[in-house]
Length: 199
Image (cartoon, one colour):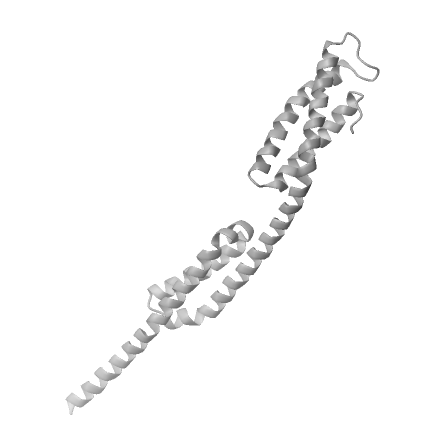
């Protein structure tokens, strides 16, 4: 009588173990798939949606912990929410990247004329400063102080323009235009102080 009872218990135990093992493979596959999906968008997400990425990473790490503890049922139960979070993260990062690309394309269009106009303004100021520095009489409205200020401004504008050009060379036209606009504004002020007209 004892043998059949032990056999039943052993069979039940085997069924339970098999049940757990049956859930192990799907749980492992689900975590691996989620991790792979997240890896594919990690670079864009870290740049355009870092806070959201942090939250999704926390969810994934929680699922990995459950997997390590053998809680396969818990892993599978957490997957729908995790997969939705990854999909939402992908949508957010993609949308923000498209916005950034569009802004950069617009800035690229603006950079074209700016890359010609601003160096001309700086060169004109530099030439005017050289002429006035050699002159014994400054024109009406131009003081020694404004001339000295214009001299130092030429160096700072050339340096800032170099930064703008480097940004454009690396494809970051938004930064290039922002820095270039700063140089243009400064050049306009200096031209005014030297009695020059900006074309």
